[in-house]
Image (tube, rainbow, N blue to C red; front, side, top):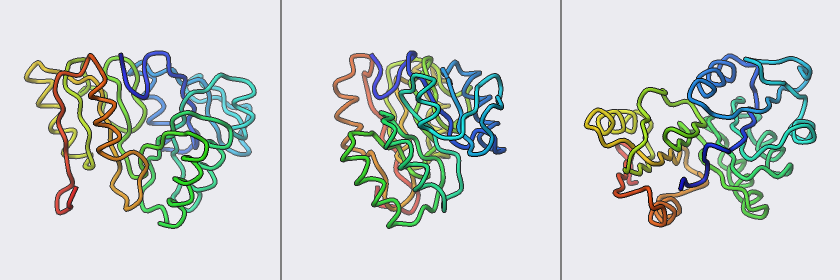
Length: 214
């Protein structure tokens, strides 16, 4: 059993035609993630790495079944992108951009809560169900299936820790990057509760942020 996402999760990429969106779409597909659609206003009808591009999230969801979305748009436009995804009914929203204005982030979290959408980030490296699905920007080679759950604020420290766990033969069940911005969606307690219920997770590693309090 995986938490939040699994091998059947169908993913939408917002900002898919940008450099970061295109690069990480390629990496996520290589990991085995089921990316079914991308969104880039004004570029509907194109395709990126074989993924059809639509002008809006609503249009994408009229044509594809979507469970989760990952956001690759500049911080000033993140609120609009997040609201669009939440309003369209995505279950999980992974927000990669950093330095999203605090009031924008607060409005996003309130709207997500009212709609029952799980938000990961902002300023997150993403979310991985090891061997099943990767949504975000983390390097593919670190994430092998195993029994260790990881929940983290710091991306760089997480890569180091997950890499060491994998090298030592443990592997990971689920890895969640909470995000480094001041206002984020999921917190440590949210993720720990889910990991505790997961029979695949035998132990948990919590990773804070250098110079931070969590």
